[in-house]
Length: 414
Image 1 (spheres, one colour):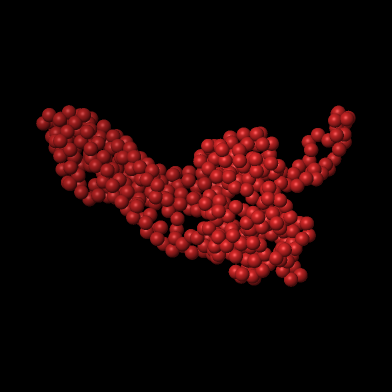
Image 2 (cartoon, rainbow, N blue to C red):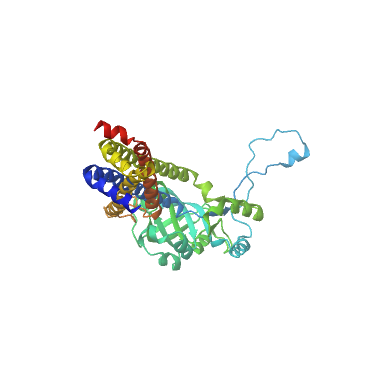
């Protein structure tokens, strides 16, 4: 084996230029593969994070809907003449919300439980009424589990948590009202009550339409705003230890508590589909690059065999059999593949670092300052394994051809 490796190295040095070209082809393919996947998946994480970071794994809520079976239908079965049935006149609150949250906190699969109170309001700006959505939140849990602090472009979450009658406005809504920190805004509730709230910060999620309507108050302020007791909640948000359990657990909680339950996969199916499509395209492009590099190795080894027919004939004439010759040319292929893989991994990581330090400033994403890159080691592992496999396959066919060379015909021809 040592002699075969020495012969392979000698042939490589004899055709150094072609060998370098083949290794560069593999290195370039791996460089682009890991760079493309790292950048694309970093971008996927950024885009998905705009929604997924702000979305609970499971959301429990009470959906207003009409009673499926009306009293008249029970009295007159088979007589279906009722139309335009209206929902029942009840509040959107969750019944026994406190008891439900206590039961959820005891579930070992649950990481965190946080209540919300969501209501529609109008912001009174002169003679104009702007629609908005007030989210009453548990500020500490929103900061800990939903990255609330990261989306505050001005202000501190502590001011919202401890202040009375304080509010954090969406950036777009604040711009429409030309409101600054410390200003007072007037809010009209669905019941027609008007309240003054002091602005303590601005929130920007990166979704322009949402930032024009949404705003946040602490849960106590929201209950006071609506004149409801401390047990009044419209949503219960749940974070799990394992995100993949969300669909099954949502169905379980819906049956157990008799309320509506939506999991994160169902609520954001379109984002998951987009991520999968972009990732598939990235892998496909990267694999094509590696296959093209394999064809380069195949062509160069074929040329080497035709140029080294006399060398192969001498090897066989001096005692090397076909399998020995085949191993020599396979070793040639694998040396090229390993050299290209090492260089590609190094230059791929270097290019990822360069991209990650390129400034990327946009008003829509105030927390992002450079291009996103995912440095997951699995991209390097996939690229190196696939490159070595491609190199072996690309070298096997020429090596098999070299093993079948008849030394008598070659020497007679010379």
